[in-house]
Amino acid sequence: MNNKLVAYPFESYPYKGFMLDKLMYLPSVLELFLSNDNEGGIKISFNGFYSFRVIDESDVIKMQDEFDGEMILGIYNLVDSEYLEWFHEQSVGIHLDGNITHYMVVTVNDVIEIISCEKPVISMI
Image (cartoon, rainbow, N blue to C red; front, side, top):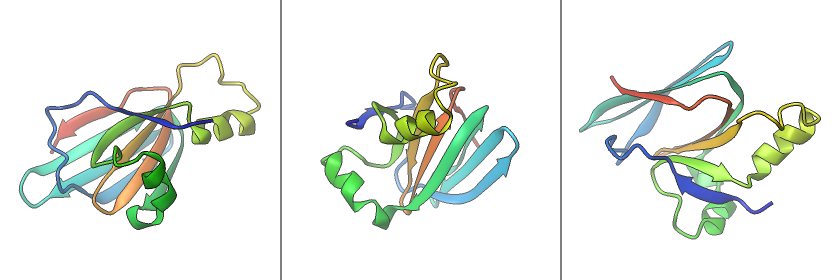
């Protein structure tokens, strides 16, 4: 596997300086609340997700090297993802026919990765 980073097409939302304020995990729903001092807040909701992980931004040194400066603040799809491969191995491939995507939300302090069968819903708060 060779992770490929693709920017998620939501240019109308300014991600500069956003930090994760709150993460809300409910059955079948994951909500991320991001804010900064200037722009207000953004809520990113994933319905129908399968897995997620949160990593401190300072602990993804290898990942930052692999993406060679492309991994900046924002939302991304990861294509040919090691995390998605791991998920399919753990679920014995039962979701291989589904439309599952590996998303990554990069903030000032955190990297949140989500495996979901639904596109995120993004709104200003």
